[in-house]
Figure 1 (spheres, one colour):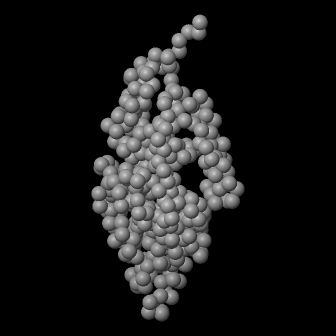
Figure 2 (cartoon, helix red, strand yellow):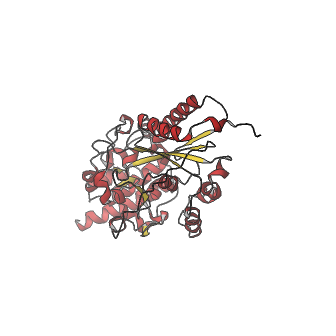
Figure 3 (tube, one colour):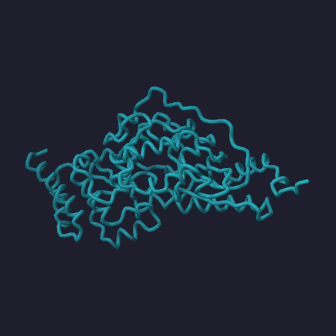
Length: 365
């Protein structure tokens, strides 16, 4: 007779219910459980990469098989706990800032502290709660929050956290889409959630029509090479000339496809103080941010996702926004002060922006 295994003594149904309760207590708005099979999503990813839509994000192709197969990323994985956490601050002046071309628009997820550390700490606490009741070292857990090759949206959709909309974001009909995702990979066999969210995009195409650069080339199809989030964060070289005028005042990321999504009328604000805006970055003037020294940039973006773009990328992005702003001699002076900056990429974008400003001044527009 085969000896009983540690799993035989665990009431996995009760444990799964406890995990969801603990997730709620730790500040996650949804906690679900999925299996490791991702359906058609690995095929979608393969086709997307074959079309080159990833641009310079070569790591997506490099880790494609690990991303598509959780058991290849973490051998032995049989269950995945997924979590969702709201990040939209209480008052982010979204539309007012976006409508004022002299202000800097920063994607709302990046206004506060970097979510990676906060999410990871909460996930670790959830694992510790699980390990306490298991009281045995026989099971393994690995936590992720946008920190490994993981098809996060596919897993979250599989665990009932929402559906992937036409804007390629996960949407929940009662919470919208302003949330972060995280995962716990484990070899503990937990009962997977069977209720999946239906797709409620219907005939709506608001996100496709609103996208400033036409990056949403069709329903559920994103050409990242045109996406402002890619252009301002992932792209490390020069921003393509035809796309610069379309970027407006967006200097780090873009929220337009969320701002226009009808389901975000049910958006839920965050209860996390760490996600509230820091240094008034929800409504700063472009010229003020452009004048930051590298030391000021480093200081003011400590613990922020904005640090990822680097000082040169920061100046590059703001230069484009200043070029798109209304004619203003003060902006010309601000830009001219950066012509000697020791970066060819920055100077190139400053020169472009100056030409735009001078053309507007000469035409009186």
